[in-house]
Every structure is written in C-alpha cells, then in structure tokens.
Image 1 (cartoon, rainbow, N blue to C red):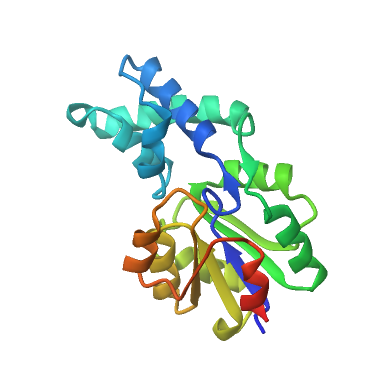
Image 2: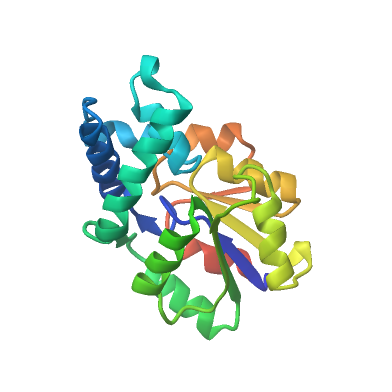
Length: 216
C-alpha cells in the first residue's frame, strides 16, 4: 500500500489555465507586447512562471531584463487574481477527502512560485492532509530536477516504494523517474496523453478515483 501521494498542482489538482493566461497577457500588454489566445497556454506552461513568461514574449524580446520585468507584472496581477477562474478538476476534492480519511499523507510539488502555491492550496484544499506544500523557491531547481521531491520526502519521511507521484506532463513523469518513485500520468490536465507515454509514465489514468486503486 502507498502511504504518500505527491501531486503536481497546475493541470493535476486544479485547472488554473485561465488565470495563468490572464496574468501572462496582463504582463504582455503592460509591456506593449501582443497577448495570446487562451488556447495556446496549455502548451506554454509546466516549467515555472519565468519560462512561461519567456515563451509568451516575442522571440526577439526574450532578454533577461524583459523576462524579469514581465514577471513582476505577472506576479502583481496573479497575486490578486489567482483564484478568479481556477477550480478543482471533477473528483479531486472527493479524492483528497478519501485519501485523508484513509490516513494517506499528501504533498504538492509545483514549479509555480511558493507564495502562490501556498495561497491556492489554502484556498481550495484547507482540510486535506498535506504534509508538504512546495513551490519554486530560491535555491531549489525546477522540475524535472527531483530536488523538490526529495524535499517533500524530508518533510514526510516515506520509503520510496510507498510513494506515488501524480502529474499531467512529461516534466512530472521525468521528475518521478529521476526521484525513483512510481509515476502516475493524468489525462485530464494540460498535456496530451502521448507526452505521458513518451515520458514512460508507470500508470496513466483518466479519473481521480483510479488513484485509490493504485494506492491499495
């Protein structure tokens, strides 16, 4: 039986794409660059906000200075509007309630900056059994580097054989592989199923309830 489930955040627990897109478009417009249609953003997210900003900028404007300036505009907007359109995927609240009732420990590891991760988890899942709520922070390399998983395991010591890592992208599956824990790719998120297969997901599921079968 698994005793710890580590979740990615965006595209796994929560559909955050509209709020991410709106904040990025705000940053683009604030700097005089064209915004993007909401439909392009699922292919731009997954490697942290700085990389999202870099991808959103015109190719000729992707200087470190422009990325940093746009990131400031993004955070100013997102900190106020990160919960405008964000919502849990169907079945996620029930899954977390079930896992908590079973005594399964939970963690979240995200490439999103720490302040936003903390705020969003507190807003949507205040009663879930999260032992670690980790986002990107200074000195912590972004996924697929496994350091964030090792940090979660230091906060909730668990044999790796008893860990599931759940995410919606190839980045997540690579993170799990590098951390030597079992991976679960979800099909309801931002990335296509072939990306999960190409990244050698140990399991691919289409409903949150299937995680219960995997932990048992």
